[in-house]
Length: 337
Ligand code: TXA
Ligand code: MG
Image (cartoon, rainbow, N blue to C red; front, side):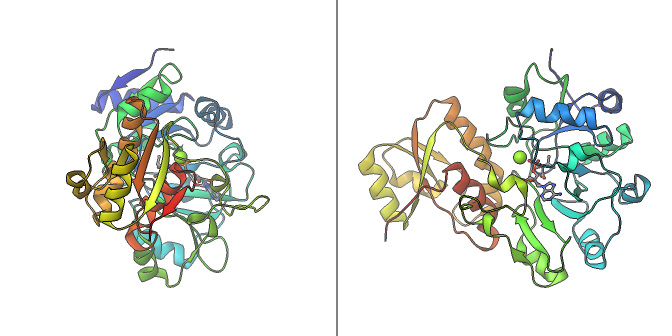
């Protein structure tokens, strides 16, 4: 199959809207990462997403809407609890995915669970594509399963060329890491994935939010994940990454002595004698999120075998980047006191 890259003109948005209605897969930009979209109401189309990504069939997908009224129109959930309404008012449209009890959503989307993840993206092109298709869209990140998520149309092309008919090029994704995922299916809200909306922002609106154990720690053998996606290998480039928890000086000293590649902050570059891939300014978590997946993919393109990475903080606004990097490194961390 030939994969066409399309600019987001009105005519092209109508072409992909129809393709989605007809059951085809389309790579679409969002404010977080690129998604691999299909008609969320058509189980057969949704199955094609799993094939194209090589995604385990027990890992459910997010349903994307372009207007809150579509939740009722398509009968997606059984009820919208009060704290969910507050979250919607505060953070939608935007990078927050909310898990609720499901109603009429095919089992292929939810991997047989009785809950469904719903997201209303803020990216204008995403909204136009959903509106043009006139159906909710199921969309995981548009990478090959296990690999870093795509933040440009070329990243999607790299992973999906020959597998899908269209990719809409909406430029670089502004947030750069996936949406925050929260479940309110139980009494206490639980953060399942840190992302574009921080835990502090959520707690400002609905009070205490628990953090699922697997957000920061590796699941132990036999432990069940609250979100099925947590148990799989994630964001892993071919490059072997080892994170180093250390001061600026200790990091530079160690990496220079090893002579391997560095995955570091912009400010580290001047102190390093090795090849550097910097993923943003120290303490500027938005810039780090915006760049991290592109940098991981660049190291693969350049054939880097081993890289020592700066280990970010694991709390607060740094949590989203930490969650991605610790997985990219397969939880391998060296502590230099
Ligand atoms: O920013 C994003 O969320 C992007 C863009 C394309 O919107 N999408 C995305 O989808 O990251 P994906 O499939 O790569 O990640 C969805 C995560 C997975 O970890 C999955 O296990 C979890 O959400 N998830 C989906 N439905 C769930 C459910 N009903 N219960 C628990 N976790 C769920
Ligand atoms: Mg993903």
